[in-house]
Length: 330
Image 1 (cartoon, rainbow, N blue to C red):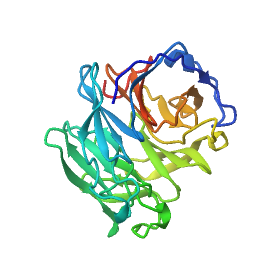
Image 2: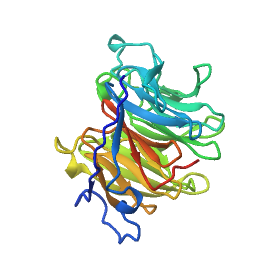
Image 3: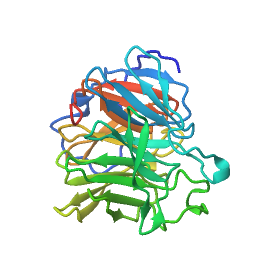
Image 4: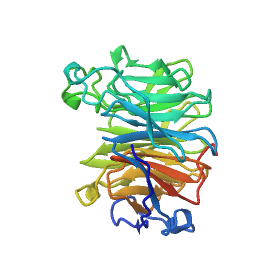
């Protein structure tokens, strides 16, 4: 992969009718991601880049995946992106019924390891960066194999939430390997017990928590129902309120590539989510603020560097955008 810098002026677009009704904003999109910011293309040549996670402090590095290529890549300042793990998921191919056998979403773990949503192994894994070994955290629900875990988030108390669409399987919902009747959003307790949070989403994908850990947010990457859903949880993590807070279905098309997919949350609660045409920004009350246009379909996004940089996996490219925000944990 080659390393280079392309400076492109960002365009902040308010997508009329795409999301929930806007509330008056005391803070604007311009305040948190200035229109004079640039999109830096850090590396390219991927098949479909995904799942970025920042490892270490200011002088750390980024790990991200290429799901169909079944590889994990490492990028650090001043160096080319390089293969870090291959295969990143299962060592299987099309003949075994997998269309995307590689790892997908990544998330930092308190042990210094990372959580890994493994399409090919159909499991949620704990990945040891140093030894490059995996430990299975969840691979079945009620005695049946998971579909192909896609993305995961960890709460400060050790509870995990993850999504399980059928994207990793050949023929998707019609796969002969698919054992679950639904495509689910799950909670994993500290003792390993799985609880089904929602079985109604057609394509649950990106997942995030508000900074207080009390509201779960999930993207549905279905072009016929391109939405973001939130779940207000009680002290037992039971859903008190389920709300569709964003709908970009009418924006899906060739002029706005991409679907609701990955997302990240700033320390003060702003949600940055990939969607049709770029990055959709929601305030701490899940009110839509506007869109940052990106030319290619973008899969996922995370904070890194000193905490103010957004790293975006955008189709065949890795992009960096500077913001006035700080990511959680920075």
